[in-house]
Amino acid sequence: MTATLLKGRRLARRLRSRIAADIRDLRSHAGRTVTIAAVLVGDDQGALNYARAQSRTCDSTGIGYRLVQLPGDCRMLDVVEAIDQLNLAAEITGIILLTPVPPQLNQTALQWRIAPHKDLEGVSPGNMGHLLADSGEFFTPPTPAAAMALLDSLDLELSGRQAVVVGHSAIVGKPLAMRLLNRRCTVTIAHKHTGDLASLTSKADILCVAVGKPGLIVGHHVKKGAVVLDIGTTYVGKTVLGDCDPDSVGSKAGWLTPVPGGVGPLTTVMLMRNACRALARQLG
Image (cartoon, rainbow, N blue to C red; front, side, top):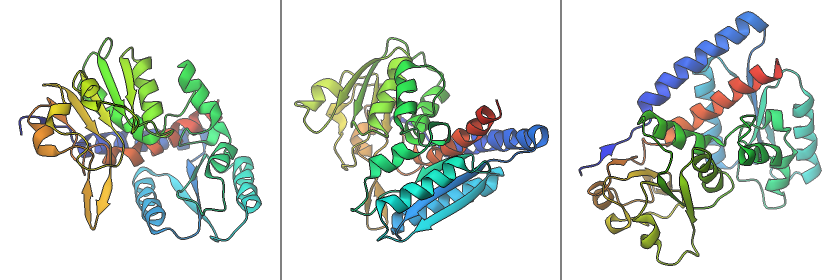
């Protein structure tokens, strides 16, 4: 492998320390602390594991964390009422909906029910609209924010670069593409219906892959010296695999995020940063 591994843990530690300092300042000057409410419907093990990881990170930064758990057979109205109560609760700074939700519920409608100023995952139409307008008054979903933080750590000039985002989900691919576009990259979005993927990705100075298909990207997909952000995560037993073949991609890329250890360690930290910014904005 000739690529430099772009690891997220060191940057995550540095950002966590900065967030903790900001939290202390807010508590000292405004007498308020940041509290996140996580809504969990049912007992999905993956969502529970994510909640535990969030809680640990909150503890390390001085952020309060409240898990609001509802039974898996509850009605849509029950979840809506729980979210509405959290929207109105002055002590709650931000809200997240842990996914997946049970099949009888409309996940998108529930995410959109969260008040934009408390929408820490940045998925409500209000936040997406501000992202599109590049107004600065929005919360970027944590995973795209983590990817951008890693890019910024390289201190590269992004303006004019060719960027390809493989994957067009509402919480990763689309907002990441928009963040890159707002930084004046020339952006192409590819997905499962794209023909001849390599003809696009092999021209990319910045290649971001967020599909969840191990080994999708191999050496011939990559421009020599490119920055490759592998955002895909697929669990095979206890092993976590990314979307890139690390050996062949690592022989072509200039930088490559490992999986695990690349974008992942920063994702929860970005959620905490959104929570800190949410309180600052709510205080005016």
